Image (cartoon, rainbow, N blue to C red; front, side, top):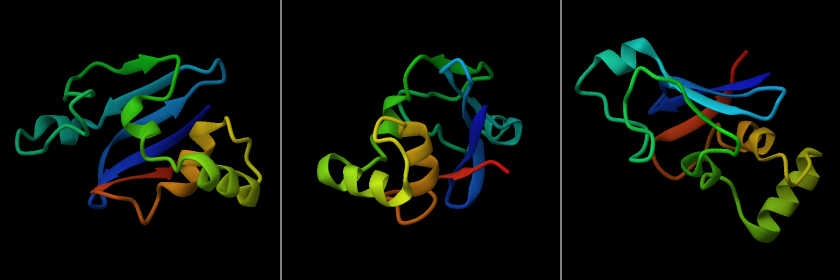
Length: 107
């Protein structure tokens, strides 16, 4: 299983993971969920105690990836399969993203 920390302005929002079976999941951290002042990570992932699951990378996170030629160049440079979106996200969304959300590998 691979996982990454989802951060908003450097503060932990939740954990995004991909199981060995290819199932993606996202769960809010209890401290983030409990604070009514903290917003949801996106409109498609409203704050809830439940763990979101899908057989594809959630659109909000998928949209953080480069597209087209830039995606191909990043994949070649990082030696990651172009279709391994989760690994590409963990490798590229830790800094220099548009907006407040970043995703870093979970050690």
